Length: 196
Image 1 (tube, helix red, strand yellow):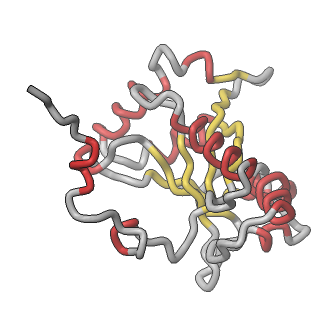
Image 2 (tube, rainbow, N blue to C red):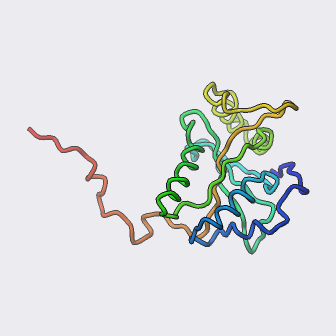
Image 3 (cartoon, one colour):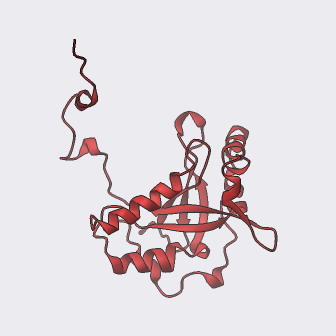
């Protein structure tokens, strides 16, 4: 769903070039440009789309953001997470994980921004889904008691919600597909042994 961002307030300085979705060599300079000057500007968002269309395959409500400077040759996307029932701290944990990663100089977590996004933009994306998904979003995000304090209303009556937006990286593989794969039956290490 296209969002009504203001093209005149979008990036014209080339800041989007610092958000490289295939470069895993994260550094402070790239973070400053990508996060503070590009991803944090909501007017760089072109569209928002729910990531799962059925409750059966989704654990949480999340969205894929496509940025204005995304092209077929160089897709520029991100994962948007909202606070919700059962996962009220999910967007905060994304930002915290990124922050701790940078403090410890591990530099493995993709650039993550904290953004106040118009709730109407997210609702417009949700409204293209089936009625069950719309009800899920309304009950778990919009009207859920614990998310109410996280929704801010401006002087014009427009509602905003704090969300995390994490750059979508290409070329990632699951742990099982890498040399870091855990040994067979690794879950057994966490089972408590009973003594008689």
